[in-house]
Each structure stands twice: as C-alpha cells, then as structure tokens.
Length: 206
Ligand code: PRP
Ligand code: URA
Image (cartoon, rainbow, N blue to C red):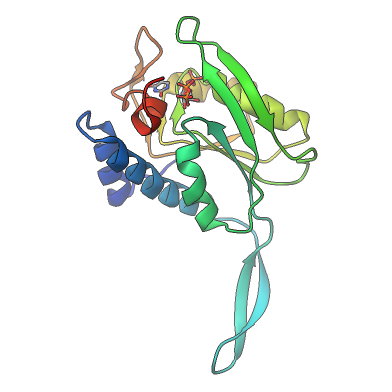
C-alpha cells in the first residue's frame, strides 16, 4: 500500500529540500519537520487502547497507542529522521541498520545492524528519506523479516517508481508512506527531480 502525504506544509518543506541552495542546517530542519508529518499520517489508523486520565479538575477518558512502532533509521540519511519520529512516539524502541549504496553497482553494502531479536507481531517503521532503486530498503526489510517482522512501514521523503515497484515485488505487504513519488531514476541511480544525496546534504560528503 502506498500513502502519499500531500499536505501543503509537506509540499513547502519538500520544496526547501529540493532547492539546491538550501544549506545543511535548513535541510536537516526540513527533514525533521517532514518526518513529523509523515509519522503523524502513518499512525492515523493505529490501534489504540482506552485509558483514564486525571486532569486538575476531573477524571476523564484518555488514549494510548496499543502498539507503538519500533523505529529503524537506516544510516546515515535516516538518522536525520530519528529524533522527530521518536518525539512522536517517545516510548518507541529504536533499532539501527547501516547500509551504503555502492554508487558504481547501485547495490546495497550493509555495514551494521542493531535490531531487537524478535519483531513478530510488532509494527516497524523504517526511516530512510530516499527510496531510489529500493535496494537499501529491501535489504533492511529482509533483516526485519528474518526477525519475524510482518507489519513494516517504509517512511520516506522521496520515492521513485522503480523503488516502489521493487518493494511491491519483493515485500508486497510493506506499506510505503512518502511525501512524493517522483518521475524516475537517472543513469546514476539518482531520483529525478529528487533532492540530490540526502546523506551528503545533511551530514556532508565523505
Ligand atoms: C541513500 C539513501 C538510501 C539509499 C537509497 O543512502 O539514504 O539509503 O541511498 O538508494 P537505493 O534505494 O538505490 O538503495 P546512501 O547509500 O547514499 O548512504 P548514506 O545514507 O550514508 O549517505
Ligand atoms: N540516494 C540519495 O541520497 N538520493 C538519490 O536520489 C538516490 C539515492
């Protein structure tokens, strides 16, 4: 399932991200703002439980998330989404996956994983601003599936049709929440029009 978050404020932040003149600090701020909106929409139909709460005046009905998602930022670029996502679900457990795309072959090169051992029955939100070929996301979801995850949402800022199609074929149950589906990939595997290299624009070119 694909959800495109097409709110005017999301489009404004996306415009700042696309703008090649946006500096690193402003770029990171726009990633954080957009993540807040994406996670908010991704949780729109989340199951809740009824609670009670005592205000300074009276007891009244309250709400709790029945199952806060496990948050999994994909290093590096997904790190810029982690804090804003965590602020939305402060009690969430967070795991980490490190994967760098080989810019010659466009294949994912994994270098780190730190994940809960058992993800069966738990919603998982993977945080990565860019879904291009889909190789990095498919690798991450393979790791999650090996731990029993069967309720996975890919939270992205920009998705390419090629990446969405790859996920649909490899992991049909995965939900994709994104601010935009762009036109295509170019010959170097970059999303067009996209926003460039999301890791470099947040943290600097290595
Ligand atoms: C970027 C991005 C994704 C990946 C997307 O990371 O954050 O993880 O590329 O491309 P794909 O869908 O074709 O796999 P990158 O590998 O540049 O690493 P970085 O986050 O460390 O900059
Ligand atoms: N990774 C990025 O950071 N940007 C793209 O356009 C494609 C992959």
